[in-house]
Image (cartoon, rainbow, N blue to C red):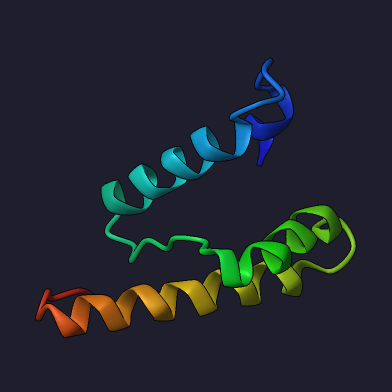
Length: 80
């Protein structure tokens, strides 16, 4: 989130930030997540409300992480 604030370009901040987040999840053995269109508005709300209600973003991220785990199970890819 700090990257998104300091990144100098208005267009593309979210995409680059989510790519960095995905890479960091893989590097730290955390099941990554991808925000799809169905949950994008919840993700934006979570970012906006983070200083006040952290559960919005946390719940959204855990939901999409569960979705990603379902894909990994389908393809029989092990994860922790």
